[in-house]
Length: 274
Image 1 (tube, rainbow, N blue to C red):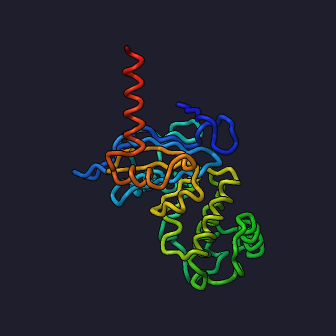
Image 2 (image 1 turned 120 degrees about the horizontal axis):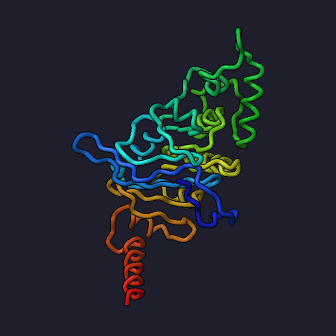
Image 3 (image 1 turned 180 degrees about the vertical axis):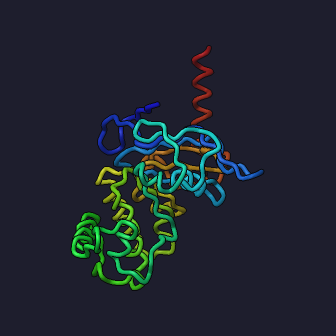
C-alpha cells in the first residue's frame, strides 16, 4: 500500500515514502523484541530512531539489513511489498547499512576499503579508475581525507566513519542506515560526521539515524521516531518538540507529549460525539 505523507518538512511537497514498515513483530524465544512497529522513511529526509537500551532499535535495523526476518508485518520499498532474507538482498533493494563497528580493514588503504568485494577490473585491478572514483565520491561528501592511499588504521574516528559511509554509497542506495555514527567521537569529528549526514540528505537519500545523542538528533534530523520496550512511543517533528519532550517519550514519563496528545484526541472525540 502506498502511503502519502503530509507536506514534507523542507520542500513543502507531497511525497511517497521510499520505505514503509507496518505491524512489524519480532521475538527471540520468550523475549518479544518488537511489537507492531510502524516506520516511514521519505527521500531527502533524516529520520532519527531513538530509545533506551533494549528498546528494539538494533533489532529493527537488523530486520532492514537482512540479518533477522520479522515474525510478521510488512515492509514496502518503492511502493512494492518486499522480503529481506539476507544482507545481500537488502543491498540489492537499495538499503545500505553502516553498523557501529564500521567493518573496515585497518591494514588496507581507503581505496581498497571502498571497493572491497566490488573491485573494478576484469583480469587485473584497475587501480587508477578506483582511485579516481574514490576521490569523486569523497568530494561529493565534502570529506576531509588526506589521501586515498593512506591506511585506514592511521585515520581518525571521524575519517574512518567517512570511509564507511562513502563505501555504503558505492552501490547507489536509496536508503542509508547509520548505527550510532558519532559514538565515541570528539566534538570536531562529530561535526564532520553530521556534515556527511547533511550531504546524504542533499543527495535525496532517505537516512535512518540511530543515536543516543539527542544533540545530534536535533542538529540534523527532520523527524524523530521513539521506541520504548519494543513499541512505538511517538513520532515527532524535531523542529516542533523540545529536548525534554523527547526524553519523556524515551523514558515513558506519564506526562509527556504523547499522552497529552492522546488525551486531547480522546477529549475531541468525546466532544464530537455529544
